[in-house]
Image (cartoon, rainbow, N blue to C red; front, side, top):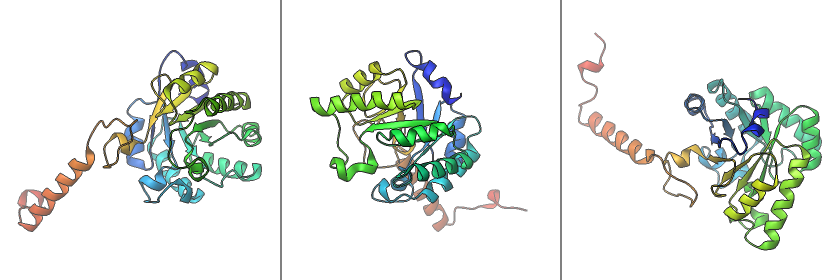
Length: 257
């Protein structure tokens, strides 16, 4: 699928996006039939152990994007522009092009940055928007909290979504906002919305793959666990540990003649 084709899916077929940060997961997702892979700056928390996404560097994002691109040969990849990588138009152009050179097909930018978006589109860089809970602005918005719960803030989100559509983004991520607000935004713009914690009425959905696979104890309200890999991995490792200590593994059947 090409990014330009996403708009045709609106109101016809739900768009499916998941995150990937490495070659193996990207390869699995590439064979799963999903529409998009996001190399999210969430990798800072999920993979690198940072407290939030504000510590992620451009170099780290490019490193992981290259790994994902080696694994995903058919699925479009979106590179998440990390904090301070698009403060100026010049920075945005340089860093977005680095994403494309690393194997991404487009980039995602948080908030309403019309000058930056226009400049990127002029250079043929597809841009995905992101409104609601924008993790790079958690200190400004008061932490990881649902956004748009008041009439005033909901109105702002709706207006911002229209501005982003006008700026030329190809799709819009809506994170942690009331479902009624997400529904109104989805109905108000012609580009697809992709929700995460924004209810069932968006044009598509995205989750952090590690969340839906059950790697962590913490689970946000909007996350459905399709597996409990943490429990399964711990069980396997403990069994391996016991068998090695008890001299049960390896036996001759796992040895070369």
